[in-house]
Structures are given as structure tokens and as C-alpha cells.
Amino acid sequence: MVINDIPGHPKDPAGGATRVPNVNVALPSPPEAATRSTNQASRPQQPLTRTTVWLLVAGTFGGGMALIVPMAFTLALKLNQLAPGREETLGYILGAGSLCSLLAAPVTGILSDRTRSRWGRRRPYTVIGAAVGLAAVPLMAFAPNILVLGLGWMLSSVGWGTAVGSIGNFQADNLAEAQRGKVSGLTGLTMQVAPVIGIMLAGTVTANALWVFMLPAAVGTTLVAAFVIFAPERDSRGRGLSTPLSVGRVLRSFGFNPRKHPAFAWVWAGRFLFFLGLSLTTSYATFFYAQRLQIGVADITTAIAVISGASIVSATVGAVGGGWLSDRAAHRWPFIMLGTVLYASGAVVSAFSYDLTLLLVGSFISSTGIALFSSVGQALILDVLPHRETQAGRFMAITSFSQKIPSALAPLLAPVLLSISAAGTEKNYSALFLAAGALAVSGGLLTLLYVRAEIR
Image 1 (cartoon, rainbow, N blue to C red):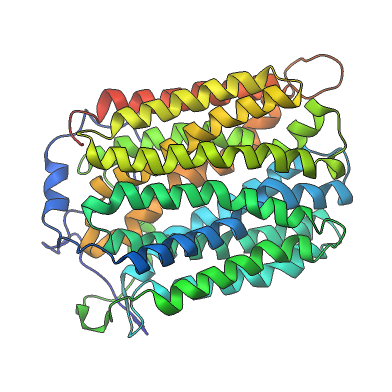
Image 2: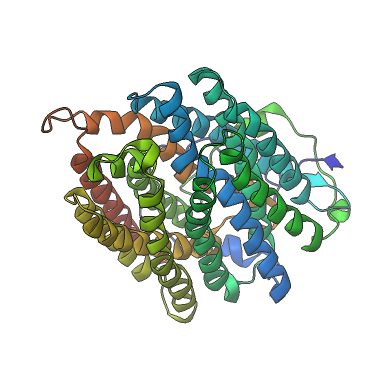
């Protein structure tokens, strides 16, 4: 396997203009038609076979389970054993993992863009990522203190994040436009369902420190391995060589010039706001349900399984239905806006719910919105992805920033919201959920106002 540079150097006419690490700057005026020309020049993808699609979906399911279950459930259980009552520590652990994943994603993305091997560009990184994620399991399971638990989670986050991101890069490389909504709907659904099933599996072995972490990772490893072995990827050795990789180019790959890719920039910003809102609530779900149902954290497994299981139906409708309809409709942005409104509505219901029935209703509405936004949003990103033929890994990594940066920021913001004056000594989860809903709607409005005129 050889790693080489790809077009995209400032002097390379095939790769476009100079990249500036300029993600977090004032965004430009609404998109111009120039963004479309970037993607129209790419080689049109041939539709993937049904078998390959299902292998891709299965790999995403497995990687998603291994990545999200610790974040949503098992880390909270372990932390409750190591430091009971210190809920805010979970946010710091998750934030550290998100920061590590944030830094690793563009590096592995740009390396995979430049990789030349008989196994293709993406497959080696899928294997490496899964191996690292699996290696982190015993570190988390047998962590004697919070520091070791945090180190284990950082390793797991980087490993499984790399594996899932690499599968996403394969999708960007190979998915035909007519398949984007449907396949994004299926992969979006798996990312909703995988943690639910993973939590149910982990909930059956909560007394075993190793298996509560190992079961989701074992399922993830098996399904990712099936994707690696059976999904075909073209030999990349004949893609040609360019100038060597340099530290400067890696650093520049962390950003892009939003004026040259305005549609991509606005979609990125809308996703950032939505996922900032979502990240506020996801990390604290276990503690939230325990407080509202007045159940101990160690005994919340059954309630979470019921709530999460009910969301499978809504996630199916939102992800698969939304993705399919967006392929057939003239626009994707109405589904994006609907997803944000549904999520915000569910967040409002949850904010004022104190019994299982209302919590189920709030979760059902929210999960529909999350699935709808995630699936159609993924198709939308593929529609506007710059330089798909040569730099898909890099720009997919930049896309992941719109989720990873919120995942790192939310744990810092959430304790502030939770500490807002509330009755007694309880955490103010109402403020947390209301803020989450407001941020999500802001993200949808950004897409509605600045992107709809330029993209489907």
C-alpha cells in the first residue's frame, strides 16, 4: 500500500483552487451555480448492486452500534460505578473522545484519498479502524478510574469513527445519484436502530463488566468484516501518482474555502446547528430518563429499551420514507426542514414529561425527525460534495466536523444548561431539551433560506 498526494494542490488545475483552513468563518452569500460545476465534472457513478448496498448497510449498522452504544449507555453505567453522582464527568469524557475523533477524521480521510493499493483506497482504513476500536474494549471494561475510562473511550471513538467514516467514503465514491436518497435512508435508519439493539444486547449482560462493552463491539466487528471481505472495491494502484504528502497539506485539509463551495458550506452550517442541539440530549439520555422516572441509573435498562424500541418504527418511517421520497421529489430541503421541526417538537414534549407514556411520545416524535434529517441530509451532502472523484475522503471528513464539533462542544454547554435554577437539587433537563429544539430548528431554517434555491 502506497500513500500519495491527490490533485488539489494550489498549482494543480485538476484539483481546483487553494484550500484554506477556514471552516469557522463568516459564511458567504447564498450559493452560486459554480458549486454545481465541481460535481458535474466528476465521473458519473454506476448504480451499486443490491448485494453491495446491503453489505454497506450492514457494515454501517455494525460500526454504528460499536460506536454509539458506549456513548449512549455503557459509559454511563461504568461511570456510575466509578464516580456515582458525577454526571457532568460523562460530558467531559465524551467531549475528549469527540475531539480526538475530530482531529483524526481529516487525517485518515486525506490519507485514504491518496492511498494506492490492490485493496482500494478505503478498505485498509476500515480494517485498521475496527481493529483499534475492538482493542479499546478491555481498556474501558476494566478501567480502574475515570482517567483510564476516558483514554479507552478516546481510542474507541477514533477507531470506530475511522471505520464508519471509511464506509461513508466508499459510499461517496460509488453511490449513483439516483440511489443516494434511498441508500442514505437505509444507512440513516441503521444509525438509529443499531444503538437501540445494541443497548438491548448490552442490557442483558450489565452484571458483566467485559461483555457489556464487548457485545456491541463484537457485532460491529463481524458486520464490518463482512463488508470488507465481500463488498468490491476497485484496485487503486492505477490512479496515478502526484507530489508527496506534506504536513502543510494535511493541515490545510482540515478546512476549505466556503466561497468556492458555498452550497456545501451552508449545508455544513445547518447540520452543525442541528447536531449541536441533538448532542445536548443524546449524551445525557440515561441520566435524564432515570431522573424523570425516578429510577436508579443501574436499573434504567428496561425503561430505555422500551423507549428506544418504540423509536424503531418512527426511525424506519423517517429514514427510509424520507430518503425514498427525496429521490422522487424535486427538492430535498422540505424534508430537512420537516425533520428539524419534528425533532424540536419531540424535544419540547420530552422537556415537560414525567411519566413513561409522555416520554415515549416525545422520543417517538424526536426519533422520526432525527431519522428524516439524517437520511435526507446525507443525500444532500452527497449532492453537493466538492471534488468527489479525487477528494471525497477529505470532504466527507470535513462533513463529519458538523457532527463531531457539536459532540465536543455539547458536553461543555450542557452542564451550564443543567445548572440553571431548577426545583430542588434536580438537573434542569427542561432547559437542556428546549435549547436542543431551538438549535435544531435554526439549522433547518439555515438550509431553507440559503440552500434551497441552488440544490434539489
